[in-house]
Image (tube, rainbow, N blue to C red):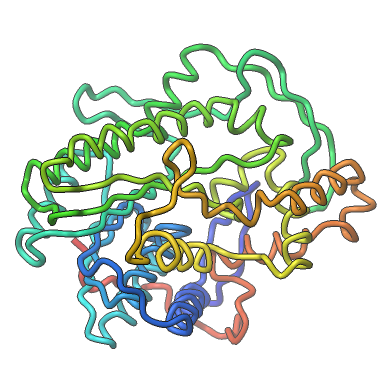
Length: 396
């Protein structure tokens, strides 16, 4: 079939298998170009099919020669219907890993469930014995707690008062004002239950109790802080409370791993175009202005550049991992540089439907968004008939 992008709001309903494969290959090529990282050799990535999780798996495998197990929840293809992009990404990853003799197996299922946790433990015992790095990179709006069966849904709302500011429809380029009503107390609780650290700790407890964590094992989860202009709806909103909980959980996990010398970190990453960030009001406009600024300063990074730098310059240097006063790794350091934020703040005041094409990088935002789904990737023939049925050979 010939596959074209079909949009519904901030979601693309189709994905292109050849474009996704080329995207994965481009990331692999980038990691290889940066040289060998003396990193972990047996790696579990929870949330391994897109964004930072996929970049973590690629960096581990092709930067350090690691054996990897990936966990994700993706839609497989059907006759006449494409898979989700994460399915095609994972199929491509395993194809390239196999070509280089790298161990790679994947589990497709609900990572919040006890059943998937047990499947992973059994697979580690069977194939790897133990893992020395666990990357936690889940991004889901809904979580069912396996212990009580309650389903929680996260919300994106400010706390205390209505939030009003600019936003942009990245499809049309129209800049408008948006107002978001404040959350209820239960919204905070629900969002923490979905996006906080509870499930991360449940994973690490299960792995530790099963004896499948190596001595001095490291685990890292990903977070975001961002600038003042987004903080009311992000860092000081419901999501921010969840991120606070995630970051506090890192210390609890480290305490629980003392017997094996284990350590948990939260890495605060840069704002990037992801399926999740596209749904957050204000963020697409901020990213458009940020991209313009960082590209002009030669500081721009995508997911793979961020994670390669995190691994090579923070986690695996042979020295103590540098953290801020709150124990967080700050790989958002270039985004939060004073000169970058001062420039973005000035552009924010000027931003309108008329000025954005000049002062922002909305074209770059749109391109990154389409490429998440395998579209507009260079060297791909989108007029060619392609097979949408792409298997993941190791899928469990």
